[in-house]
Amino acid sequence: MALPKLTRREFLQVGAAAGAAATSPATASSGVLGANDRIHFGIIGVGNQGTNHLRSLIKRSDEDNIRCLAVSDVYQKRINRAVGILGGGHGYIDYRRLLDIKEIDAILIATPDHWHAKLAIDSMEAGKHVYLEKPMTLWSRLDDAMAVRDTVKRLGKVLQVGPQATSDPGVWEAQNVLKAARIGKVTWAQASYNRNGRKSDYDTPPFVIDPAAGPTATGENYIDWDMWLGWKWGLAPKTPYNPMHFFRFRKFWAYSGGLATDLLYHKLAPILLAIAGPDGEYPVRATAVGGKYYDFKYDHDGGEVPDTYLTTIDFPSEYSVCLVSTVTNDTQVQDRIYGKHGTLVNFEGDPGLSFNGPFAPEFERANDGYAAVEMAGKAGRDMEGNFIDVIRGKGRLYCNADLGATTMVGIGLGVEAYRRNRTMLWDAKAEKGVEG
Image (cartoon, rainbow, N blue to C red; front, side, top):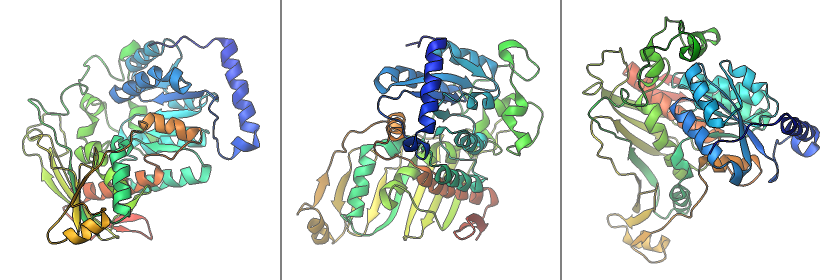
């Protein structure tokens, strides 16, 4: 459904309301909006994922009393498409012009990874709440995750990171189960995110190269390559335009961590939520193995990331997490959390519990006399809906800045371990990764 354009009168009315809210003692410190206050969104990055979010926000605009006012992207064709979907509104190559729109309350960021931290911090500094697509930051810049986390705390803004499974009611039910020690002491967990296809996973739609596009093109084919790289801010190395880098950025270390940050971030976040709680837990150690075994073995575009990747991450509360991702076979390793007395399965759906080994008596005492338990998670809001609710002061975030940062450190250490062929440790005092 396309939204009508804002009239000048409506735009000024929105601005007046926003100005009044900014001077109100109740909102000046918290930024909380009431149920009757319309939330105005801007979207930075309207490629495939950003456009999906745009369509979703438009679809829910009446139900949730929201409106999208503007978009930004470095590729003019994407801007034109997004403005067409909006049925009007504003589109900018330079995201800073979008942040200057005072009527915008919330920014949704769906760009390549190397831009995530700067855009999130700039948006919060501009007074906006932030929905940040995963991963929280680039894998190699874990100090950026600390900076995003600290900016949230300093400014009191709502920041939601986007691993979808953290919205699954089964994960929150699993958290209650583990907190009550219903499977005994947790010692390890496993999960996977695997795919398979006739063509390389990152060479098929939406990773389609437009040969007409580039920094020397005109009209809708224009790409602001320097802005995309962000080299002026030290976000990526300055390099000549390469369409493979732009359209298939997840295959290059300068902009992405490949399968680890694209897929396994989705798995570690709910595991940490279930085991450690809503803020997660920073790791102590990470290792990783894998390689370019099939799909990415004969890449002709210079792709760098592995097509098969396995990582283990150890945590100070004395448990380990094993994660697997490949695009060479889509058979999954079942999601499981293992305790001394029992096992929890399917925590991203309807969790099931069962005793293990000779520990049926202990398990049954913790589970009302049952040797196996099946439960259904209570239905909840999706990630966007949860973000909107929390802006209005209702509920708590599914993936807050703390969980986003702890997940980022675990995933980032694993990628660093793979790249260096070394075990990586987390120095909790200095908040940085070091070789083990």
